[in-house]
Amino acid sequence: MQIYLPIAEVSVNMFLILGLGGLVGLLSGMFGVGGGFLLTPLLFFIGIPPAVAVATGANQIVASSISGVLAHLKRKTVDLRMGTVLLIGGIIGASFGVMLFNHLKSLGQVDLLVNLFYVVFLGIIGALMMIESIRALRKSRRGAPPARRKHNWVHGLPLKMRFRTSGLYISVIPPLGVGLMVGVLAAIMGVGGGFIMVPAMIYILGMPTKVVIGTSLFQIIFVAAFTTTLHAATNYTVDIALALFLLVGGVIGAQFGTVIGTRLKAEQLRVLLAALVLAVCLKLGLELLIEPSELYSIAEVQ
Amino acid sequence: MRWLLALLTCLALPVEAEEVVLGLSRDQISISTDFDGSEILIFGAIKRETPINAEPLQVIVTVAGPSVPVDVRRKSRVAGIWVNTLSVEVDRAPSFYAIATSAAWSESISHVEDLRHRVSIPQAIRSVGAPMEIADSQSFTEALIRIRERNDLYQLNEASVNLREQTLFDTSITLPANLTEGTYPTRIFLTRGGAVVSKLETEIEVRKVGLERWLFTLSRQQPLVYGLLSLAIAAIAGWGASTLFRIIRQQ
Image (tube, rainbow over all chains, first blue to last red; front, side):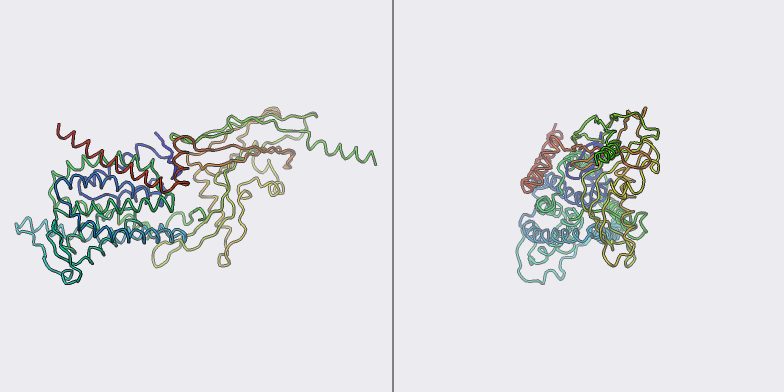
């Protein structure tokens, strides 16, 4: 059944959108990431204009993050104080990201920017995750307990603050910086940035793993909500109809994903996620490197 | 002097002697949520005071979408990756353009008449200037036509107008699913020997209706309200989903 999307101005198959939402929801349930990094490229692929895909992707992330954070709040695995610090950085980053996005849109380079961001960040994160999880797999086979580094350069910075839930006493500069970076990414890539935020919280800030996902989701809700509003107000590119079908699919998929996720080992999950991230990165990277069959493209004059 | 005037009138008469009487299956296309393209039937008759001319008459029907300026961009390789480097602004290009003729294109209209009435696809696009550094601005216009033809946005359907007894004609134009809103000027030309003998213009309105209309208007006129509405929907869906599944699990 075809539906006409009022903002994207294209007609798409309803079940295809539901399926996409479901697939991304399944993965986000399995791996505990928002899934925006998969959703936005998939939306490009089925012919949604990039600007609409990015803005609507951000809206979809709001819904899936709220759904996730409620469960974490109940388990008290959200560091609200850390979340707020990350959020301040995030809002500043997102404003800057949307400004950059609009500027490059007027230059006709927005597709390139989005693609480059995807290739670079998915490549780095995917490779790091793959190396780390393969190491962890080997270690767990040998039976050695995984060691977490307690002190690094982060702990020498000024403006220290106590984060009780995380059991940390560190400077606010690194969380602000991490928040800022993720905010820029959220605006440009239409992602929540969980796949960058989570490793940054563990390896840079040294937060305990159990509060990482909840806290990351908490701040992503607000950054993604802010991004959505900015895109809607300045670019008119949020498509409610598209978002609604993605939501329905995503919500159902996430529940099945959670069930599958609990049956797999954490290390196995991380290897799978890393492989997935690298596959998306490779596909987008090849598109930039291989000569396209159509060199020309049409865009409306701004 | 009087006979000269009479002669002129006689000469002028054949031009207006054949007129189109037009019918449209619909003059309003509504884009609703389930819009999946549309077909309009254009039919009519030729009214004439004089006997049918020996030379056969041809009919050309054109339907155009709203014209807007567009940027056509070309990629080239920069530092190993493919990047949009050059762009040409085309001053006016219809978002949709379909031509239906009753005979092969070359038999339907002469080049001079095409230039005068802007009938063919390249004539419907107006491209005035390209930046100095672009020598082959023509290839940008060609690319525009090629891409839109591939998406069925530009169509030339030769010999798709049925013309009976030089009097009754009908054709159907397929409008694709990715249609934009606006007024679609529709023209019918009668030609004989490549020259236009009569011309009729009308309009087809393409409008989003119902929910589509409401959402689109809201997003443009009250973007902030629209943004907050989409967030509210997302928040309710997220909260609703987690609540619903918790209830299911508890049972």
